[in-house]
Image (cartoon, rainbow, N blue to C red; front, side, top):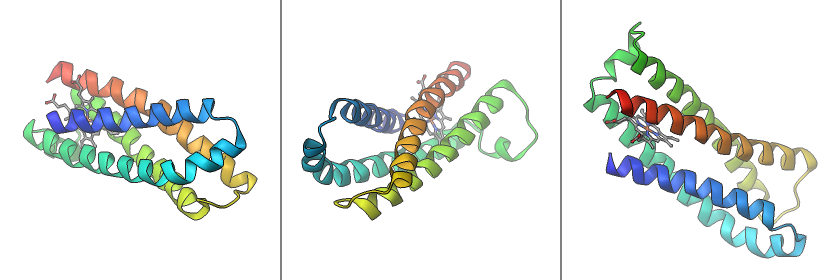
Amino acid sequence: MHLHLFGAIAWIGGSVFMFVLGVSLTNKQHQKEVYPHVGPIFGYFELVSLAVLVSTGVLLTLENGLFELLFTSDDSEVMQYLRTKLYIVISVIFATAVHFVIALKTNNKLRTKIQNLVSRASSLFILFANIFILHYAIMIRSIL
Ligand code: HEM
């Protein structure tokens, strides 16, 4: 649980910080100086925290006897919250993969309009989805 919480702090804190950086660093020259250095470090930091979250999350579901219930038709409140949380986590993993592929392909290069749009949309989606994940995590915890 401690590791899961630490992972959540790192993952969500990182995405909020990058959002603030994205909004405040509007000067193109400054962006060119900062992103090529910060981007890869941030990317790998976020990947590690996501891996920690998923692995400790699986352990927590096992520990609470919820893992087996995921594959049954159990429709209790806690399972509804857990399933909803997991659907959002899966979509966040997908959005992270999309964002990561564009970042890897275009670091130090000029992006096309569509790459820019998809990259921004995916990071905005991750930011908002995290708020919902946090909400469902709190609801699950309040039942267990
Ligand atoms: C982006 C990914 C995730 C985030 C940000 C996240 C966040 C959190 C947080 C903050 C809590 C603690 C809530 C509280 O104390 O009120 C929590 C609890 C929990 N999480 Fe996650 N989580 C994530 C992924 C997962 C995954 C993938 C699983 C399962 C496979 C999972 C299973 C659980 C369970 C079962 C608890 C409750 C544990 C308990 O009360 O003993 N989480 N999560």
